[in-house]
Length: 581
Image (cartoon, rainbow, N blue to C red):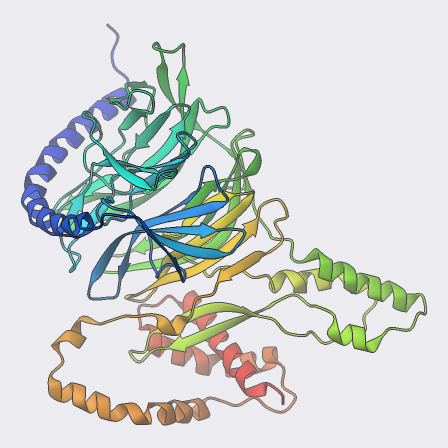
């Protein structure tokens, strides 16, 4: 026998280490999970009391992340299930089920007896069989204080034709985990990766399991080739011919010392392909090296398969880890990956072409000597205008929210040479979701739907419930289906629960003067001079706003982010105090 290569030795060593760690984690987490099992059983006993299906028209689901959003396999509907919400003190897990009617733009909450218990970071895959099915596997449940975790290894199917949940009890499946990925490949569900965490230990997986939709049985696949390193939160998309799946990115961490952990953001890509006849299938891993402009490294991004075999990637976060701090840069950009050409494409929205054509036509009429109708110019529709609002909460946290408001744009007399500049102005006014991670995304009717997610400012987490849609054929602009109201954001500091009654009374007595003090604070900001443009105002007052932002964000905030937020605050103040001037 020949000598084993270094790569093979490393793989074997990693497998042995993973096996030892899995036993260690299993022992330590068993006691924790037994405690949580009692709490989960209580939820299930409450659900068991429901004996009939109740469907109720409702407002959009509450703010959440790490839920599943799936396209209905038979109808023009979306299905949202589960997720989590954290308000600074308490973690909430959901098992509610919502249906979104795309044509009617309406939500229905469906309460079906005996559902899966509350969870997040699970996987859900729609299947076109038996009138439509939604398969759900794994995920996690957390104690209210967020310090204990229970990782599910159960498999459920929602029969959409009959509105019934069924718990599929098949042996030999994956161990309990969350952050894994599941995709449909021909007549089987493939499950890859994920992680399992207890209070003191954690383990990441790179195993691959198959669940047959014909025999309802699990099997762990034996795959040749070099597999991806263990990870969670990657993206797994089926190949156009259904013969395999593509794995991209993900996150994992290692414990370097007793109290020191190091996270790794993966940006590699692998192909898992099935070859051979039925009953003699062989699975092979191979590494892909896609061409084009690749996305910068990130985790927590959202991905869905669009038309023509193109996968759409949105957002995510890049965490910069230092000894005692973790700061993230959140994204809201779009990338397309062509699974056929094995190529990345950065996506740039085109804006509203209809408005551009109308303005260009008006210029041609003017150049030809035809009189312009001033009333039509005043009433002509214009694209939306992006406004960045900075909301400073009582605890000093600065929350940056991008909003888009309609507004009439003043007609400008320019020549045809300015058309390119006008296109750039239109592009800058395009509607787009704010940067975020852990959002829910899916594609239906050639449109990308994006719901919720979260972003952070300092130690504060903002969980979202806004809802967007993007036509992947036109790639012109995002449509806002549900707008987020930042004032509904709830965040409770730990110290709040320890405040004495006396302190609460003092706070209550001071509430009446908050509005007045806010107005006084606004009066202290430097005012815009008569005739001063926004650019001139920002340049003159930049250092003032930077000092104010630094005080709100803390000394650990990065200079680049501080400047960005400072200029946004200056813009909001300028626009609020120069309207109608």
